[in-house]
Length: 476
Length: 56
Image 1: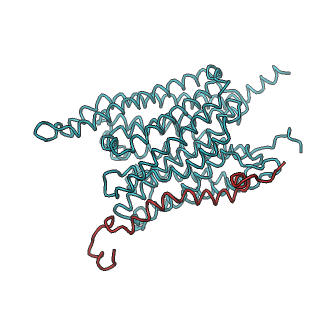
Image 2: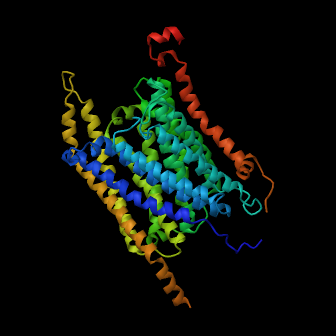
Image 3: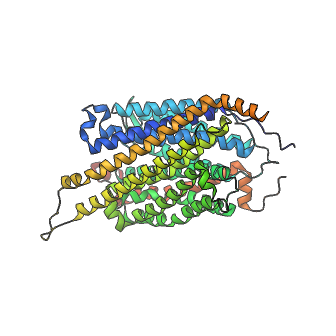
């Protein structure tokens, strides 16, 4: 077989999803920045019900996690599966259907949330007609991905590459979680009641809630890391064995962690403790994976000085390592007693979401834009500018929430010599104001970086043809 | 140059449907252990008038 002939890939749907992901990164971080500003300056809700904090926050989480994150996962999955298996998509038409229905379903979710329609289940707010549609789209996505791998030439590609494993475990687990947690009894077109109640409902909700983080936002994005870090650094992954351990330990372990969200509640003690213990054990595969990514750069660290896309990928692994250490610490009961219900949790989520998920996505998206349009970026300097805006913004955000969260927790539990609480709740709210302002500034910096990226991507695509021609003339 | 699978890991890496089934089994365990017992533990159930009627 002539291995020098590259097969043609289905790039159209990947292009659509890539541009969509960048667009919704801008929109989603804008919603987040505005919601953060409402907390600092409540008058900003302008007394409009549709944009009050309670609704805007949920619109923000759905836009960034599911529209931006989902489009990134779909773009990269369709991109990676073709290239690591040396085949075109099993069904390009189905991939387009998946991408378009996913966009419509998620935008409808964001709109219905602003209109006040919600199941009230965190990260699962869409009412039953939309939930069924999204489950259907997810099934198409999974089917297409698995069948594409199955259609590879087993002579040239005997073993399936590790990036694909992570995508598959995400697809399976999200299907389980989304279907079970979504079981509900509809009473009208936009109203339904969960099939579960009490502590069972809480446990199922957080089994979903934590694994939306563990699989949608971690396993899937690790799949991205395992393809794009070696590609961008032009080195093979540091250790194949480590990736085998990372994958199986992470897939088996992550599903147990949901219980740590329910410490000191009606949940039986053993379940919360089990969640905390396995959370602690998860440091090992998580750090193994982070090291596997970082050490891929062994002997090529100097490239971080010149390759701005690689910077995004590597700093994302630093944040991944940091937040996968912080998470188990917060899952421990003693720490949880202080941290739960405070801003510390919000800070932890954002060090993962901004530092890890968004940064690794941004690196992958820049890489894909250059490959898909077969050109250099419009401006490399702007990528560097974006990198610093994103990094400084994330650090501002996370540090503000650490200080605010620990202060909140300590103020709530402080009592005076007579055993009465030292502070009223509202005093703790007033004390948080400066940190809320600082958080809004951090969010604004991150949003500005995303806007710079959108401009850079649009200009790259618009000028791609012209620059290819001039490059061709120069080479002729 | 497909070679014979050396071990179980190698075998499921080459058989995507086998991989899918094994992963599906593995990720289901944690949820089953943590969720299912809650439906059978007496103290985890809310007491209502129906409780006596239907047991628990």
